[in-house]
Length: 162
Image (cartoon, rainbow, N blue to C red; front, side, top):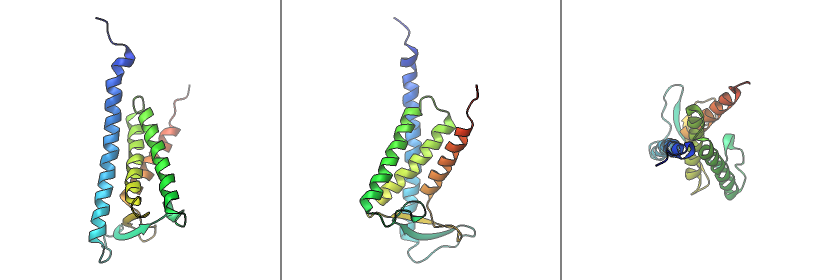
């Protein structure tokens, strides 16, 4: 009997890493989708004041800062779907060898993107519910996307110099 090759031995770890990161992305998407469903029921009568962060129901037919709100729904869904697929592919490809932070950042972006895509698909609008008073109303998926994106940028700056 021969010992497994390094590549074959690494395969179960790669599967575990990919599965873990996809599970994280799915959990983040589920959390946001659950909050969106709650907001659509609980905030119909008006906003809930919470200090620096209020809960206020809003719908956005565009993407960030309502960009593309006038575009046909199919275009916004197709473009965001394509971007989501690219993020998923990058996560899948880099998961086996990437750092945990890199994987978590990609899973965060993917989870937020999937949640917004699922929310947008039926009617072309994303449900927003977090309101500061000085910033456009947003949702938890947006927080995941922005924080994951910022972490990716920060990690990209932290490259090893030879």
